[in-house]
Length: 110
Length: 116
Image (cartoon, each protein chain N blue to C red):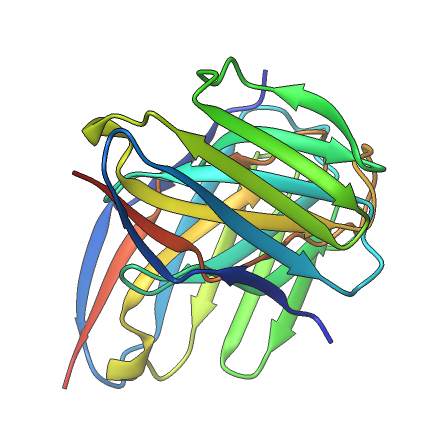
């Protein structure tokens, strides 16, 4: 049974810093690893989807990687901005059910 | 159009009321989902519809009644809810409800439900 874990639970960084959010999963037979952003009280915005045949995906200042053998995915955010403050969720979206991590709450200080 | 639209955005209802949440997508997706999310927790799956048929019910109380009248529309009918049912209700869609690569999940902005 897939389990997804995100560390740290919360992170506070000064503006301009490059940062990495971590996601680990127990079942390496993963088909998709998707990263989402959620603002308080809002829905989930899809940031990046990495298929199992891929190693990484990039969108603007975001880069996500997937290492199935180690059961890890990372989301790299370059030159962080206060507008990046949100909760970031990773999820296994390749099965019948989506399995979410608990999320990392990011606060970028101006 | 990669949008999942949920209405209403906010809903306050009494414990004896009957109300409905609505979700719509026009991406041709044949898998639609309802999730419940409490504060500072990840979304919890409630129901999965595949080709307009209920395929997964995560042992949700009968006071929540889903309906998928066509391939674009998903409803969640609410009746006799409890205050602990107050939460953000999220709808999502995917091309298919199968195990496969590349099936990106799209979420709506949610309905903030308060039961008084």
